[in-house]
Amino acid sequence: MTSAPHWHVAVGVLQDQTGSVLITQRDITRHQGGCWEFPGGKIEPGESVLDGLFRELDEELGVTLTQARPLIRIPFEYPDCRVTLAVFCVQTWQGQPYGRENQPMRWCPVSALDIQTFPVANVPIINALKLPPAYAITPDCGPREQWPGWLDRLESMLERGAQLVQFRVSLPPGEQAELAQLALNYCHRTNTKLLINRNIDLAVKIGADGVHLSAAQLETLSQRPLPDSAWVAASCHCSAELAAAARLGADFGVLSPVHATSSHPDARPIGWAGFGRLAAKAPFPLYALGGMRTKDEAKARQLGGQGVAGISGFG
Image (cartoon, rainbow, N blue to C red):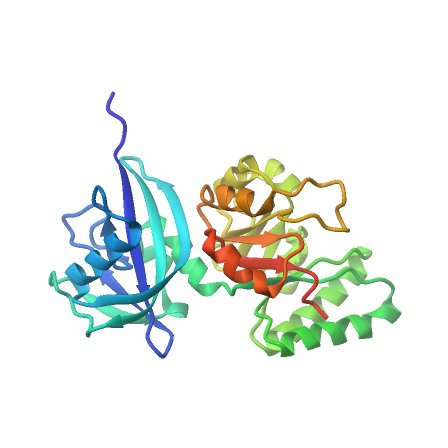
């Protein structure tokens, strides 16, 4: 039996000054024909990824790539083939893009990208474009008298530009729901997304933007717990948990611990090498967690990650 072909593909996301991205439509006669996609194509034998992207952007759009940075690397299996997408944010280019192969094309705001009109393998690209480079995790909070100070720290974090927050607080159910609602109100004032740690029912009840699943939940759930309109994230520590998160349809994950931390002194850190190795297997955006600082965002991205996550940037 002949094994399915494995295509290595270079993909470029061109973004204009308004934040819109360039998408093109595949010829109806090609694999996944009729779908919208980001420009790019198969890497030829002997080509580097960037050389392949340079050539593809010239052939498809008539532009010359001058600067790009890694966005995400996506391994994906279709029924009839495997693809590995090396995706770059194209920061600068020369020339005016046009459909050099007579393919339809248009500029589209990231918020308006419809995953239903793209090949399934492109969905993680859309998620990566919508996600920020930092994922803040709230510290725990105690009795009600501590809530004002906790909310002040949340507000301070939001004022500094946080765009994605995980609510991780251990309180009795009624109090947890009350504080979560307050936190959601604070976040939505600044268009920040709030995910609830583990508690799926609470996320649904208060209309949160999603849920963050624990590694243990990955073993017990049989299907994605929320609709596509909400975010589903997952905590992962190994390749098996990454695979479990992918089976559930997680939109992004957090991989830890990259470095040793005082909160989990017995956990064995994977280091940056381990993060890069596992990130290459994740078919979704992945944040590095464990001893992270804002300055580590570039390192995480260089290794194929979305960015960094942590509690330290909260207050």
